Amino acid sequence: MKLLEHYTKQLEQLRQQGNFRQFTANRQQGRIIEIAGQHMLNLSSNDYLGLAADLELRQVFFDQCPLEQRWLSSSSSRLLTGNFPEYEQLEACMSQAFDGRAVLLFNSGYHMNIGILPALSDGKTLILADKLVHASMIDGIRLSSAKYLRYRHNDLNHLQQLLQKYHADDTYERIIVVTESIFSMDGDETDLNQLVSLKRQFAKVMLYVDEAHAIGVRGARGLGCAEQYAVINQIDFLVGTFGKALASVGGYLVCEPVIREYLINSMRPLIFSTALPPLSIAWTRFVFEHMQKMQKQRDHLVNLSHHLQHKVQSLGFCCPSSSHIVPVIIGDSQPAVDKANYLQAQGFYIMPVRPPTVPANSARLRISLTSQIQPEEIEQLVALL
Ligand SMILES: *Cc1c(COP(=O)(O)O)cnc(C)c1O
Figure (cartoon, rainbow, N blue to C red):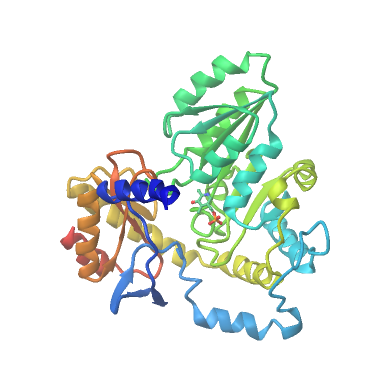
């Protein structure tokens, strides 16, 4: 009992700060989420194109996938017996989409980010990361033996200053710049063109860009901001997840063939974990091919996003977003929680995001739009804000 008291106290502290977390049971049908008998429009979803909730699409997939191919486990790492044809098919299909570059799959975006960075780094590596990169990249950096500095969020001038200072330092043989294209909490974006032109000025620099929130959503074929800004070939490590717009599970890396081979030989979460079920991989390929044709939904999402960004701004909130993720930054945790509860009672499922997920005093409502939302619904929501 004595030993548990410590944890009880920690939890009490979190409750007092309004930062206590717990699971909420829910049921979902299309764009509607039901919690404790209440039906709400889901504005906290990462299902940006509505593909996870699309029953027709799911039916088409199952109809063309015979039972013998519906493997629900790979029973092993890909390096042992787990390398089913589905893996190579998805990698080949993605490689073709991404200008013939090499592609490697991972069990999740989290696995990907905690695995690649330590595998790539040694004592002669310097990692420069945006201040607001996702926890998975922070964990990857911590697991690595690289030296590590953070530059001010989205401040590429600060990054340039750090590069000028450290590039001349012979201690480092390589400098890996780590960032996201669309950021998960502010919904703002890295200027990939400027980032790429910085890289061109410094021979030791490699770019690591996480497109978790951009894959499926940006670019003419939904390949992400790298496609939108025509820099697919300039980013050394282009990573993303299938868990969001792609309605599946897993992560991917687009890279040079030598990096792919190197990771197969050194990346621990890839080597020592059972590969995803082949059925999931087959579904990912099915969705990946389908989503490339969804330009209409992407355009709709852009229009909705601009509309909401302007409205939030005109209400007097600072709105850093230029994407479908639109935060309403409130400050203290408790008022953010209260506001979220109010909106939920009115039928809009919006969740509060609090420290430590976001910096202190920047608790917020995080509105995440999908192509399933209609402009009238944005109007109704804005009236309640
Ligand atoms: C969600 C997310 C991840 C994690 O991906 P999973 O596939 O859910 O593990 C990684 N990076 C970023 C930026 C994310 O938003």
